Structure formats: C-alpha cells, structure tokens
Image (cartoon, rainbow, N blue to C red; front, side, top):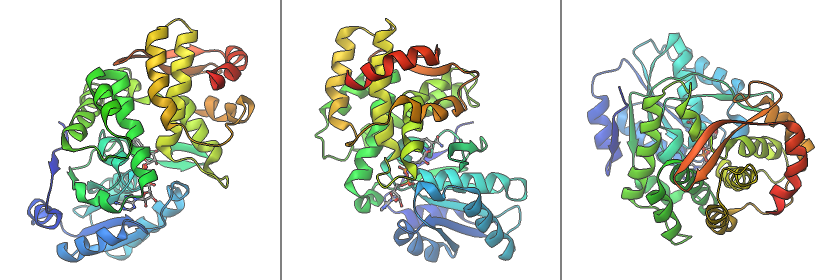
Length: 339
Ligand SMILES: NC(=O)c1ccc[n+]([C@@H]2O[C@H](COP(=O)([O-])OP(=O)(O)OC[C@H]3O[C@@H](n4cnc5c(N)ncnc54)[C@H](O)[C@@H]3O)[C@@H](O)[C@H]2O)c1
C-alpha cells in the first residue's frame, strides 16, 4: 500500500486533522535550520520538539541515540508518532529512529527541502551514515503519511533548492522524457511548481511500489549515485563539501559519458545530456579515481570488486546492474572527467 501524500496549504490545520486522536504522544523532529518551521507546528500540535544539528555529518548513530533517549525520557510508548520536518537528512534519520524505537513507532514526513519533497521522503528508505559510508545502516520503513507544504521552501537557501533539482532531472532522465524536457525548460533560478513536483514524485513512487526492497527495477533510482555517493562521501569532511544533489549532477554526467563509451548511449543523447547537465556541475577540482575508489567499492549496490552502475540508454530510459571493472574505470576515468 502506498503512503498517503497530501499537498497542504495550511500545515497546522491539516496535520492536526490527520493526527487527531490516533497517537498516544506527538514528537516533532527538526534540525537547527528547520526548527523555525517546526517550533510553531509543535506548539500548534501540542507536540514535543526534538532538534538535532543540521548537516549530513549528523545523520549518524550518535544523533539517533540521542533521539531514542529523549523519546524514552518522555515516556513515549509504541503508539507515539514522530513528525519529521526537514530535508532528506531529517526524513532519513527520523525514519530510522522511528523504525527502531520500541520495534517501530509511527512517523510522518514533512519534507522541507526540494530534494526531500520529490525524493528522500518517498519510498520508505531510511538510513544513517557510518564509518564514512553513506546510508550504511537503515531500514525500509514506510511513513504513515507525507505532507508537502511548498511554502517551507521560502526559507530554503538557493544552493539547496538547486541541489534538489538534481533528483528531478534524474527522474526525467531515467524514466520520464517529458519531465526531463520540462525541467530543461524551467528557468535556472525558478522553483518548480506543483505539477512538476507531482510528476517527479510519481516516477519515484511508481518504481518504489513496483520493487519496494530494491531487488531489481528500483535500482534505476540510483542513476548518478554510484559516482555521486563516492563524490559526496569524499568531500563530506573537506572544507568544501558537495551537496547531495550537486554530487548527483556530477554522477549523472560521468555515468552518461560512461554509458556512451560502453556503446549504450547515442552521441546525440549524450550531447543533449551534457548540454543540460554541464550547467549544473559543482565547481572545484574533482578527485582522481584512486581517492574515490574505496567508496565506489564500498557502495552497497556492489556485489564484487567490479563496480555496478545504473546507466542512461536514452533520455527517459536507463538500465541497472551494469558491471564495469576497476581496470576499465582506471583507463576511462580521466576521459570521463573531460567529456
Ligand atoms: N531515503 C531516500 O530515498 C533518499 C533519497 C535521496 C536522498 N536521500 C538523503 O537525503 C539527504 C539529502 O537531502 P537534503 O538535500 O534535503 O539534505 P538536508 O536535509 O541536509 O537539507 C539540506 C540543508 O537545507 C536545510 N533546510 C532544509 N529545509 C529547509 C528549509 N525549508 N528552510 C531552510 N533550510 C532548510 C537543512 O537544514 C540543511 O542545512 C541525504 O542524506 C541523502 O542521502 C534519501
């Protein structure tokens, strides 16, 4: 059964109506940036506010443990609900905490970044990072509902908004050519409207529903993520971390070039993908292969010393389980960087 999705113009009223008397206690989880939205919501819902530091490097066991402890201290029982108001870091962390607390309490996602609205909040994946490996620990654990309140984006920094567009381009590139066209037609600084959000969400939820635990088809959603996660992990503790979406933009570009090199993607489609994605690439020096190889091989999508990729084969179509040997990557990587 898919998670109910609500587009809400008045979060406090709509959430109160949904939460009603279903739960024994209400908790709102936010980070230090989304707290400004979470505080009034918690007040209106008579919920306890739990705040963690913002940033991907806090999506970890230490923060999960602190939240579990706060839930215990507050006497939360199995009928409590956790409302996760934040970007993908909060929906992943809050979902993970909810999945494990007392063997699972209810959670509701209120995504507040574009990336979380179109991607992270949907499809039931939760997770935390460990030992520098992204999402090393996690569950498939569905939220009870997802509320999208577009006005939350008013306070989202522009760089974060742009990062969120990566997943929308990704959804278009892997499975919806019309979405890809619509995203390319959107002015660079514009915020996508509800129709685009719905289209991007539909692609994700349809694929996730067809393959909830990622045995096959759902791997398509990892387009751009093999290189992308490696870049994101490599830069995470540097002085110039890449945002998740920025890393995915870079990953999609390199994976499109790799696909062309393997004879899976035509020159014409590669040209179009490069024309669009080159406008969205993170600045700065990209690391040599040797420095990201540990993450490419640690990536949980890989089964052996070969690296598994999802590769675009046309605009609107991709294939998964494409194994490339480390030797070939070593040969091709410098050319993939140059295009
Ligand atoms: N579970 C999944 O299926 C899935 C899919 C894609 C990504 N993810 C995860 O999502 C995370 C990336 O998501 P993200 O880009 O939203 O990261 P994020 O949650 O770290 O949010 C990015 C930044 O924006 C801030 N922010 C969020 N909403 C705001 C608002 N309305 N106003 C002001 N500031 C706001 C946050 O505090 C943070 O500083 C990664 O951890 C990634 O692994 C999960």
